[in-house]
Image 1: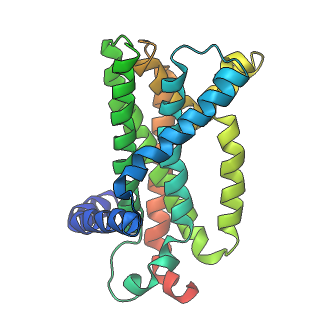
Image 2 (image 1 turned 90 degrees about the vertical axis):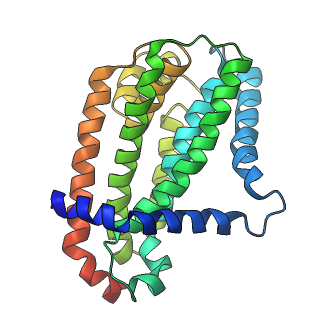
Image 3 (image 1 turned 180 degrees about the horizontal axis):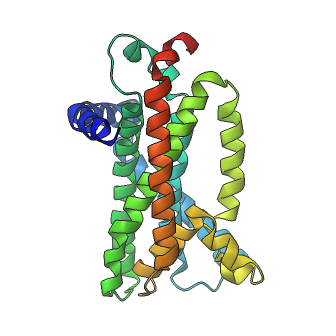
Length: 260
């Protein structure tokens, strides 16, 4: 299966890139501000959360605006890709019914489009780090394995929800509720370990999104080595999810057209 997966990725990667580019163009086609919204949207949410939790609730987190923006950048990537994946086969029924390609290629295209927007967000993070004069250490190199783990985890989860989304009409509503709940448990605008001292460490380490976001903040903002044990654990879990998701798609994708 691995050889088939690698062959298919090479074969259809150009299609994924073209599809991702088309999605991005369509997203801003009728907008006056065009691609500037990809900058304004996370910036506005960062300012809102900074005001509410930094000034109203008096958060004392160091470099708080950057702290929030790192969390939002990673969360938005996962959140948008996963929600888009639930009905991605149905949205692309006209293409899927005419040409064969492994259906997870639709996920790859969505992943690339959202990764592009996340890259823009992290470009803003770099500018904010310069503005706030945040010191940089060699730990910034952990950025690469953390992002790789996030993308792999997102891909695996998205393949699974894509499969079940073909058959379960209400799955999108369930996923929206679950993601809303997960958002508040992930510590986007607060430090889980400090806010919930008794069980905060467990909530942080055993929540994949919280663990990866915390690791990213450690290496970018606080010049600390992230928790390598849990980074390794979540990478291994991500590999398992991706393998299971791809295997599920290969096994069942022939029945998708009948269901949609």
